[in-house]
Amino acid sequence: MLQTQSHLSPRIYGHFIDGVLFDPSQNLIDRHSPVNGSLLARFSDGTPKDVDDAVSAAVRAFHREDWADLTGSARAKLLNKFADLIADDADHLVRLEAEEASKAIKMSVHELAMVVEMTRFAASLAVTAKGEAHTQLGPGVLGLVTKEPSGVVGMIVPWNFPLVCLFQKLPYALAAGCTVVIKPSELTSSTALEIAKLATKAGIPPGVINVVTGNGAIVGEALTGHPDVSMISFTGSTAVGRRIGAKCGESVKRVALELGGKGANIVFADADLDAALDGILFGFVFNQGEVCAAGARLIIEDSIADDFVSKLAERAKLINVGHPTDEQADMSALIHESHMHKVLAYIAEGQKEGAVVICGGQRLRGQEYDDGYFISPTILTEVTADMRVFREEIFGPVLCVTRFKSLEEAISLANLTEYGLANGVWSKDIDKVLLTTRKLKSGTVFANTYLEGAVQLPQGGVKQSGFGRENGLDALHEYMETKQTYVKL
Ligand code: NAD
Image (cartoon, rainbow, N blue to C red; front, side, top):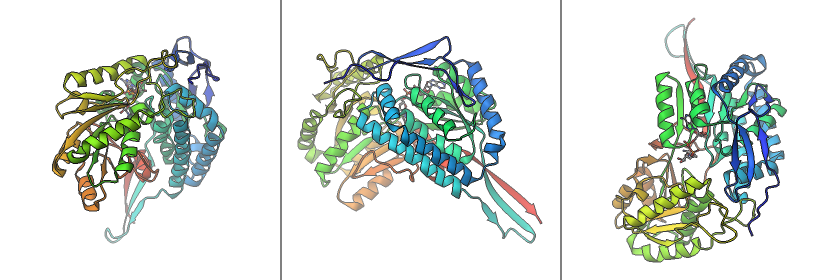
């Protein structure tokens, strides 16, 4: 049964600047529940002046003795305390995130655990960060390679994983010694503001973390164009990423872009088919398909396609679509009404081009669903590489199925999109798996699993999915400048 009343709303926020959560501004952006339309939260509609105030605070903090002069160990201590406080506040944060981003709560619980883990991992990197000394450059010559924090980092993040996307950046930038101004999505700003308060409680000095809420076209643009911001780290759509990249190019500002995707799972006939069914299903329904690395395409060997796809459809029909706070729900409503219509339009266009819907395909109706933007898991078969649904990011619970007859054809089909974020391969033949993983053009390849990760492994995209890496040691170095020092002794 869908619950209709939120226990936490509505909440009203101002910006978080220089360690202070300000009163809400006159102009507010309302966030309504995509499940039942109730008012969840009101965020201040930021202005370029707010961005300027936040950047000034971040610039001051960057030079403060109690931040700039800290040792890696001291920085790690603060980060670990920050992680403790996030873990202590987990129930609250999980509920905010689930409501605003429309996430099945059991997934939100898992995401919060990842946030804590990323913070602790970044703390460990702060302790071990090091440079190089070169002692064989000639008599009386010493060469040093050192890493220095980049400065003030602008972090612009999307709505689908508000905290996870932020924490693939934030703790690493802090570990590096940077200060930050965060621009969360206008749909899901609560948790960024809540964690900024926790950071202050953990002892992270005022001005190190600042949050300005509001629209991308105003706040995001002002942050990207600000002369005192040294770097923009952006996660979002490829269209906005191109714009941000161009703007950073004009002012020669560092930029990292984590953009869209159109992942494919290649399933060979010799795979563990039961495991593959689970992995393919999870890959396209997790977070109702609003996942950059979603396994949105199934490239399936012709000889097993009929049986595999009909079993997949049976499993997809068992997916429990419900309210974010329903602990039994596997997935929930799409983020907002126009996004739901966009997903439905893609399904209709696919059908017009010859694809066949074998399950889902429509807005869910009935008393429990009427006030929300629910679409059940949808499988489109007979999809060919010339169709838009094959190539473009739909960002909903929609799987596009295409058959192949040879390994080369499978790889070529998987690579036939402008994106290069994540792909998967399923086979018990290790040679086939390794050959395929090498030829897939994406920053991530999953073999015999899908949508897993570890903080130690750097992730990011190639092609139109962007550049830059998050997590792993690479994430620390994203926020540092390399300096060479040539010393004549
Ligand atoms: P979006 O690009 O519309 O918005 C992302 C953020 O950018 C938001 O905070 C938005 O307010 C801001 N923004 C919008 N216009 C801007 C501008 N002109 N200047 C500066 N900032 C601006 O993306 P979205 O709809 O919030 O998120 C969905 C997209 O994010 C999908 O394409 C998805 O694939 C992508 N995504 C990628 C990753 C990854 O790791 N590669 C992770 C999550 C989401």
